Amino acid sequence: QSALTQPPSASGSPGQSVTISCTGTSSDVGNYDYVSWYQQYPGKAPKVVIYEVTKRPSGVPDRFSGSKSGNTASLTVSGLQAEDEADYYCSSYAARNNWLFGGGTKLTVL
Amino acid sequence: QLQLQESGPGLVKPSETLSLTCTVSGGSIDTSTFYWAWIRQPPGKGLEWIASVYYSGSTYFNPSLKSRVTISMDPSNNQFSLTLSSVTAADTALYYCARQDRTDWPPDPFDVWGQGTMVTVSS
Image 1 (cartoon, rainbow over the protein chains, first blue to last red):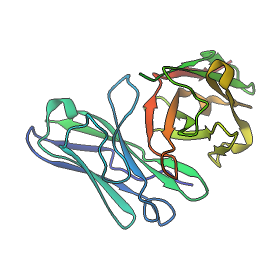
Image 2 (cartoon, chains in turn blue, cyan):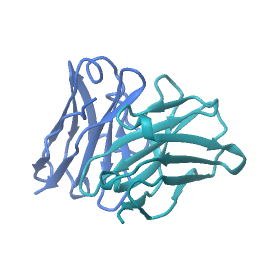
Image 3 (spheres, chains in turn blue, yellow):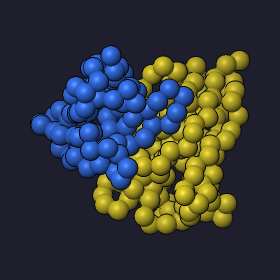
């Protein structure tokens, strides 16, 4: 099994929107609506910001949204704020009871 | 408030076995509502799911690690553990324990994480 594919970096200015992609296959992202996104600050544990493609845990700002089309899932951060600067990882349930992660995207707020 | 805390040796010699324990506080691991998982992150790299365990004894493993991994639960001490045999430098990583929500199938997401414990494989 291969990791999901994410761009290594993304950036945007405060107030702008940024979208991060996560590409898998028909055996994972394309076949299951169990894609999650995790935010990780340096030296900290990851925190889930989106699960089941579009759902936000309580306490996560509605600036964070998720979507999926075919084998690619996306995380959009609207109204960028300085505090959104972090690493973001996607994860997907895959066939035969496996969970895959993406390689991570470093989001920079310019 | 549920908290997870990893513990184990920070240094393991090549070819030896790595053993880690995750102690859960603020809730019981002996519940049908959650799976319990190990995830690792090599320095400067991405996350990799290792294995998950359920209170019933059901286990799932990353196929690339399955031959070397054991995961188990100790409900009496509210802990779950990971062993990884025949380690090499490639197993050097920050190891996290985490909870998976089993409200639906499949269990997802990893909604509570420990702070992680760094394990270095070196002679």
